[in-house]
Length: 155
Length: 310
Image 1 (cartoon, each protein chain N blue to C red):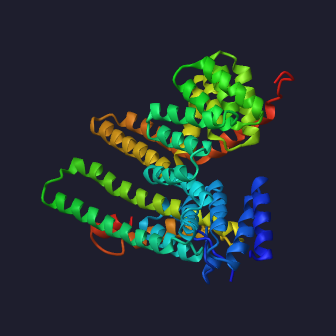
Image 2: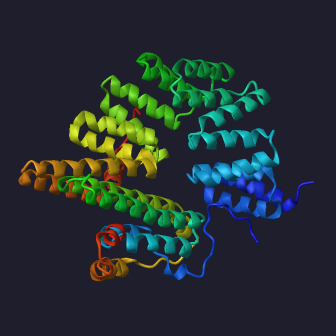
Image 3: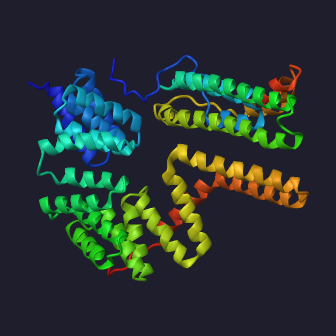
């Protein structure tokens, strides 16, 4: 077995499903976190990214952070600590958190993806999934549970 | 005695590195390390290749392996220091340089690298002293001459900077840093065309040279303020790396959102709409700008015909 440099991707049975990290990033804009972050995590394993467990942890941490921020927001509104006019400003915190997590995942995965491509890894187009999930499945999924918490976290 | 196959691969790797075939060198070194996973020099050379390929975390790991196998190896220490500087771990780089200085007290590389760290940590006087020491040890090293010239240029001594750039170019006419230094000196003297020739020459030798791109941006700014601004922005964003450029864009996003909401709250919906449209234009621009910038740069390089006198 030949020597492996630590940033090189490892072969994986999921490699036929690998896409450019650009598509999960686009998915945060068209679909939401429910589509983007699990896709990033799946793609990390499909491309055999050396940081795949860190990427999975970040995706999970992303949902945990979104939940904490959303609960904080909703509680503040319920208790009257946040006026109605201040809500859109407070929501920026949640949006920025989602963008930070998404771009961090994109940056990590981007580095190993170049090597994955360099070693001849298969790359599929993520266009169809991004569009179908983004435009067709988005509303049913975000409305799957009553209340604002689910929509705020997954959106 | 060294395995003949390892010896052959090491020689091949060194030859490949000397002509810039980094991919080939990595494969040769992989062959060596497959046979002998603890060979310090192979790990060190591999770290040097990975560093040039900007695979920084892997380079740091390989340099660490080289040092673990042979803690006193000057090759391993040299590569490790360069890797640590690239990772902006200046304290650890300085500590390793001290070990290297004890092993090689007359090495101009050590003093020049120390000067580089002083430059990053804004210790300007110490930087000058380290560069002068490096020059004393090897007065004919173009790298040191160019670094010293850059120091004097930054401190307003244009004559001295130009003289040092000329000396460096006499020793090594293709030296990228010296070409850029001379370009800056000429630009400050108002000779825009000659400055441009130097920037393009440096870019032809190294198309990714940030210093040469920065010089070209300064030249653009002389002819057209907005074009210059665009070049500066593109060069700056490119130099920040993934993490920091994303932070800049996120900061711009927060400013945009807060502004739109505040303007809307004050009943100025038209202005809020206009700001939103400008934001979308900016977002579209950030998607297409790298390609536009590359095309503009290629056009710039293709248009240049160097003067016979140059």
